[in-house]
Amino acid sequence: MDPDGDTYLNVNSLRLSDFIKSQNHKLIVLKLDVEGAEYAILDDLLKTNVIDMVEKLYVEFHSELYTKSKRSFFITKENELISSLQNRKVNFTIWH
Image (tube, rainbow, N blue to C red; front, side, top):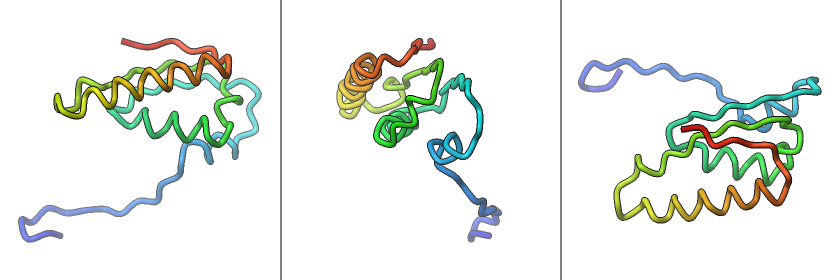
C-alpha cells in the first residue's frame, strides 16, 4: 500500500514470444491492440523469429498517444516494423 492508500498487486508476467513458443499450435492468429506496447512486442517477435510462427497478424499502431516531440520517432519505428514484416513475408493487416 502506498502513502495515498492505493493497493498494488504483484503478478507474474511472460513475454508474448515465450508464450507463443510454449504453445503447440500450428495456426496462430494474433491481434495486437496494446496501446503503445506494439513497438516493443513486434521488435521482440521479429528478433526471436517467433513472428514466423504467426499465420496472420492484426496490429494497431498508437503513435498518436505520444507527445509531438516523440511522435516522429514512433512513426519512423512503425515504418521500420512494417518494412521488416513485409521483408519477412508476414501476413499482416494494420488495424484502425
